[in-house]
Image (cartoon, rainbow, N blue to C red):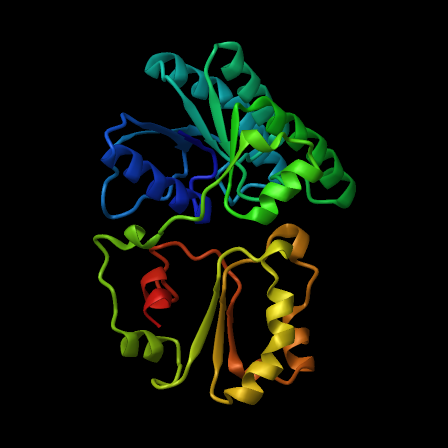
Length: 287
């Protein structure tokens, strides 16, 4: 299993998947970032923290160079482990990852690639023209892997229509259960969680959690809030997670103010790991 990010939702998805594969009798090794976000319960598989690009205190360029230079470490682990199959979870720098993928195929290894989002910016591509270049590289990745996994029918349709991937090479598997990430962590009660967040104890609460990007439709949810609040005046919404680079020009504060619903919304515009001390995953999931 190769997961280059080492944090955020893809990292949690990979852990859930890997644990289930091991539970079903597979021998598994994970190659991931040197800045791998560890959880309280040790994983039941081998973890190689050798990939670069995960230091979020560095510039994008520094991270990209670090990621490229450490690909040799990935190759060393592959040679040592001698796997029967490689499963890649998305890409951090596509122009580098396509080279890794083709090297794996050159060695005769079948590669499964999970497409968490068919069209998105990578670490080095944020401007529109760079995103267009990124899609050219994405196409090469999607056509080089033996099999692709997507989570939704919409993603499957995009791969077929936009990238020309044959339908028989795409498998749709719904998103897994991330709650196992909370094993070994004290879960606060619902009331305690609401007190921490300054929420009334007996009101309906909605949660929008994770990186903000166009495909998740937060703008549509905000557009719908006035109608929701008209029906349920005590409704509250938590928006927890950072905006991706291509989404940072959207002024959500202004959108909420214009619709007269700002007082109904809590926003925490940060990446929120399991260990974050104020607005933690256990607190959010308990609300």
